[in-house]
Image (cartoon, rainbow, N blue to C red; front, top):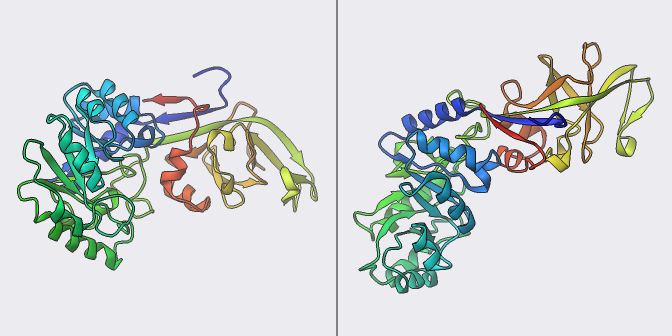
Amino acid sequence: MSASSTARLNVDLAALSQNYASLKRAAGAAEVAPVVKADAYGLGMAGVAAHLARQGAKTFFVARLAEGLALRTLVGNDPVIYVLDGLTDPSAFAAQRLRPVINTPDQYQLWLQGPSEVVAALHIDTGMNRLGVRPDQIADLPAARHHGLALVMSHLACGDEPGHPMNYQQLMAFRAATDHFPGVARSLSNSSGLYLGPDYGFDLVRPGICLYGGGPFGTAHADIQPVAHLSARILQIRELKVGESVGYGASFVADRDMTLATIGLGYADGLMRSLAPLGFVTVQGERRPLTGRVSMDVFTVDVTGLHVSDRTWVEILGSSQNLDAVATAAGTIGYEVLTRLGTRVPRHYT
C-alpha cells in the first residue's frame, strides 16, 4: 500500500473461498457459476475471478462484452464465459469463445447467421420485464440446428423477498417455457433465488452478492462471511465545543463538548453521501456514529473518550461492519455499496 493512501480495501480471499463452498453446498447438484460483472462487484475482477477459477469455478457471468474479453485473459481458455448484455458482434464472441445470452428474437437471428462455433444461452423473460425473449415469442424462434444452445435462463424479480408470490409465478412460467428446450441446461436463480429452496436450483445458479459477503435477503446470513474490509485513516483530531457545528450545511451541532476525528474517505472514493446521518464506523472495537455530512474526500466521526491519533485506522466495512447493515444505514443495498467503491482506494488480496 502506498504511504500516501488514506484508505484501503482488503479482499479476504479465504472468506471468498468459504462463501463459494457454502453456495455449492446450498446449490446441491446445480453448478455454481460466479457472477463477476462490474469488476467483481467492485472488489476487482483480476483478483477475484482468477481465485475462483483456482477454486474450481468453470462458468462465469459478466454483463458487458468488454468484461468478457478482459475475463478471458484472466482465467484462460477453459472456463465458460456468458455475456448477459446479449449478442452484438458474433465474430468477437467467436474469437474469444465467449457465449452471448440471447435477449431478443433479432439477436437470435443474428446468432444463427453468425459463426456456428458461437455457443449461446437464451434468456426468457418470465416477469422481470427488462431483458429476455417473452414466452409467447419462443414458438416463432427457428431451430438452432448447427448452432449450440447450451443454456436457457431467466431472472427472479423478487428473489430477495422469500414470501413474494411472484417467485412461484416465475418458477411456473420458467418451467413451462423451458419445456420447449428438452435436454438444455436451465438456470433461474441468483444469490437470493438459490436460498428459496431446491425447486429453484435447476442445473446452474448464478450467485453474485453472496460470494462477496452480502446476505441473500438483505441481511446477514450465518453461512456468508465478509469479504470486503474497507478501512480509512484518521487525518486529524479536533475538540468541538457545545454549540459548534461541523461540515457542510452545519447539519451537525454538538450538544456537548466532544472529540471528532476527520477520516480520509469520501464520496469520491465511493462512500455514499447518504450514509450520514445514520451511518457508523468501528474505531478501536467501538461502533461510533458519523457526525455531519460525508464530503468528497473526508467525513467526521465522534471519537470522544477514545485514545486515537492521526494514524489510527477505522473500519467502514468488515467483520464489525456488516455489509448489509451499512447498506441499510445508507438507505440502499449491499450491491451499490460495493460497486461504488472507487479506484482511489487500493485493493489488497489476502
